[in-house]
Image (cartoon, rainbow, N blue to C red; front, side, top):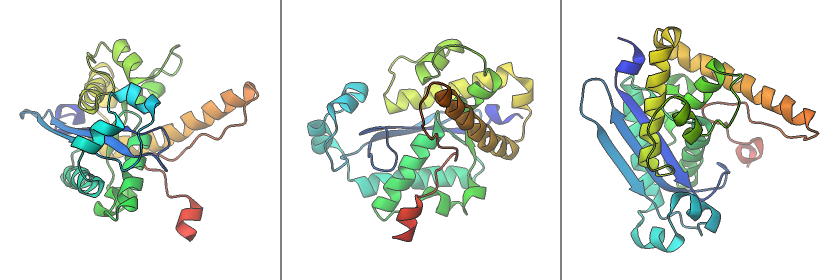
Length: 241
């Protein structure tokens, strides 16, 4: 049976911003889907402990006041999220995350910030990670398509419904459905061993980052695009400290 027809752990977070090194989790969702079993949904609302900027609130709809009043304690939420993902990975269930580099790196930094054992350490290091990223897959298999590559745009391309964009649970399920649809359309993708697919995405994500850097240089913009995937290693300055 192809990987896409087995159990999948769809994961998404919404945050206080777009920097995984400093921004905080506000909402998170993990949906265990497929494999001929009922969907099992888990969701968290977190009090990030910092102000949620108006721009972020406009995206996901969670204000600072709402998070402070109704959100859970960050260490408890990060522990629960990390433990659930680790259990799935140890069971051979892949994590499906759109733009996994952001979500998994943010979760990693939150874990370290709050004294929680990070996901990579719970699964035996990078070799224990098993991730499918529809963002990376779409850019690899349809690299010349014009237009945006946001989750909403990709869902539209593959005719996947997304009725509540930027709600973590809706985005998580949409990412899993895009991955499923891609595997349905591409026999070579469906036939690829999960472990091999993970390693391929490591290389593809790096190639895509290098290509984007070249594009920016052509526009006169000197920007570095992160190549590591799915979890960016801690900055050297942090490790040295």
